[in-house]
Image (cartoon, rainbow, N blue to C red; front, side, top):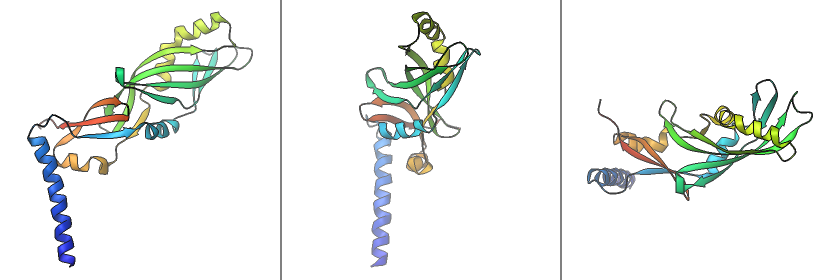
Length: 191
């Protein structure tokens, strides 16, 4: 009986790997992929905040963990962050929001998915004078880049990619879908 179970387990594993290899070898239309749900992304990004971003010695922006949203129509993620501005140039603390969107890239050195190509929507501070808000929005793209550049949203574990590694595949294009991020696996370059 133990031999039979071992035989069945080995056969099942071999069939699964063979099916994946056949699927890839036949040039099927769909690529193998790995999906990361929005909740998992939200959990990982929350560990990177709060963050403080100084603005030329005038004040600091203290950013709280962003609320992520999927933007599949433009293949990006959006984020709204609660932000607090305080410092010598402001007489008191001012609460506001920071709206951004960004693309994603894969970093092979540590198997992470990271934010890049960050675009600022708007910094909004209802209690600040319009001229100060305009000044903040002028610095906005630089502030967005400083505060979110290369933020890690997910880290692939070796077991997440083991079958694909064995088949000579590596993470490739990242697509934002209604379910989360879909990481496609493509053939590793020769060499």
